[in-house]
Each structure stands twice: as structure tokens, then as C-alpha cells.
Image 1 (cartoon, rainbow, N blue to C red):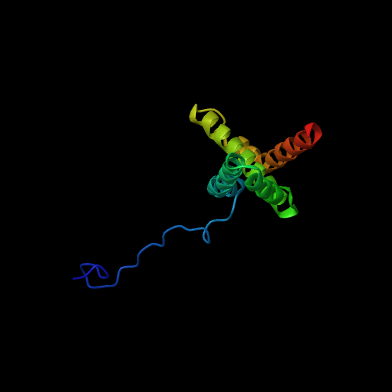
Image 2: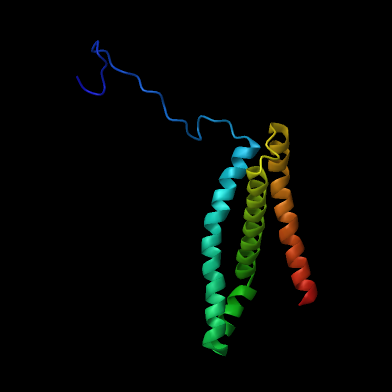
Length: 136
């Protein structure tokens, strides 16, 4: 007898593992996935921060090249995306820290927080950039 049959010789039907195509997306699920994606994006953004710091240490020409890239439209879009990912991931981390204490676990509250989370992260990212340009 092999794994595909049971003791009576009939083929076993194995249950499907749950996956994203089975579940209906709900706000808390989407935020969980987005939290993981922003965490991964922060690794790549950190490479850019390291490049900028290394360029500053290497001298004026290297720093000028890095500054040119970060000052371009593409560079600024990447930096804004990095800022947003940082704020989004930070808010998710704070939420998890609070929930680790046992607070804020009610279904309605977690759904509300999941809906407010992207709005708050965009507002924080924009606020950081406005303050940055104001003090520039």
C-alpha cells in the first residue's frame, strides 16, 4: 500500500493547504502581508543609506554622485517610498508590541487599525518630507 491509497485500496483525497486564492482578503490580512513586504523593502533601502554614507566617507566626487542620484526624480521617489515603508513598518511594529501585551485584540478594533494603518503611514511620510523641505 502506498501513500495515495488507504487500507481499503481507495484513493485518498488530501485537503488543500490554505493559500491566498482561497481566502477573501480582509484588512488585517492585507496589512500583515504589506508589513512583510515593507520589511523586505527596508533591506534594499538600507543599501541606499549605506551607499550614501560610504560615498560621504570616500570624498567629494563620490558624494556628489550619490547626491545627484538622490536628488533626481527617480531618487526622490525611491527615497519617499523608503520613508513610507519605514513608517508603515514602524506602525506595524508598534501595533504588534501593543498586542503582545494583550491589548487591542478585539476584531472590530484590529480591523479599524488595519484600515487606518496605510492612511497614517502616508500622512507620516508626507509630514517627514514637508518638515525636511521646510528646514532645508
